[in-house]
Length: 156
Length: 289
Image (tube, rainbow over all chains, first blue to last red; front, side, top):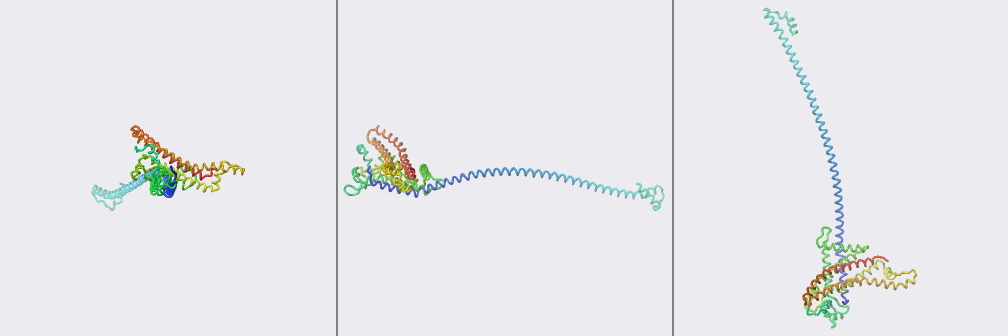
C-alpha cells in the first residue's frame, strides 16, 4: 500500500464526478420527483373535490326528483279536478240543451195541435152543416146559419 | 497459479499495477513490489485509476441518461431505479442535515453509488480480472487489482476531498475566526484570560485530532474492510490451488458464503461512508459549540 500520486488522480476524478452529478444528474431527477409529488397531491385534491361534487349532485338530483314528483302529483290532481269539472259542465249543458229541445218540441206539438184543432174546427162547421143538410134534406142557408155553426164549432 | 507458492500468490494479488519512473530513469510499469516502492510519490496505480474512473463513468452516464429522460409522469425502469437511489440518499441527507445545500446531496449520491460499484467488483472471483489482464498484456507477472477501494489511495482521496469540503464549509459558515475559535476555545474555557491562553494549546491538540480523525477514519474504515474482505477471498482462492479435492470443495462453499456476507459489507461500507460524509458536513454547517 504505497501512497502516491494515485491520490491526486482519484481526487480529481472524484471531484469531476461529484460536479457532474451536481450539475446534470441531481437537479432533473429531484425536479421530476417534486413535480410528481405535486401532481399526485393535485390529483388527490381533485379526486376528493370530485367526490364532494358528486355527493352534492346526488343531493340535488334527489331533491329535484322529489320536487318533480310533487309537481307531477299536483298536475295530475289539477287535471283530475278539471276533468271532473268539464264532465260536470258538459252534463249541465246537455241537460239544458235537452230541456230546450224538449220545450221546443212541446211548443211545436202544441202549435201543430192548435193548427189541427183550428182546421178541424173549420171543417167541422161545414161537415156539421152538410150532415144536417143531409139529415134535414133541405138546404140550409149557409149565411143564415153561419152564426149557429160557428158557435157549434167553438164548442168542439 | 498452482506452480507459485501461496505467499507469492497472495503478494502478487496485493500488488497494484504501478506506472512511474523506473530505476533506469525511464517511465514504465513497475515489475516488482520493491520497484513500485522505489518510484516514490510520483507514481500512479493504473488499475485503481482505470477501474474507478470506468465505474464512475458508468455511474454518471447511466444516471445522466435517466435524468435526461426524467418525467414527472410514469417512470420507466431505469428512472425508477435512479429515483429509488435518489430518494434514499435525499432521505438520508434530510435526516441529518437541516440546512440548504446544493452540494451535499449529489455528493452523497456520488459517494454511495461510486463506492458501492467499486466495492461490488470484489464479488467477481479474485482471479478473473487479473487473469484477463494477463491475457490482454501477455505478461504473466503483471500485477492487477480490480477493487479500487482496496487501494488506500482511492479511499484517502475521497476522504481528503470530503475533508476539504468540511474545512471549506466550516470557514464559510462560521468565518475564519469562528473556525479557529472552534479549534482552540473548546472543550476547556475559562473566564480568566491568562488561563484561557494556557488552555488554547490543549484545546487545539484535542480538537485538531478530532478534526483530522474524521477523514483518516473515513478512509481507513472503507479501506480496511475492503482490504480484509479481498484478503479473505484471496486466502480462499489459495485453497483451490492446494490440489487437494476436499480443500477445493471447502473453498467453493466458503467463497460462496463469504461472497454472500460480503454483499452486506460492500453495501454497508458505501452507506457508512455516505452517512458519515453527510454528518461531518452538517457538523461543519452548525455552530454546535
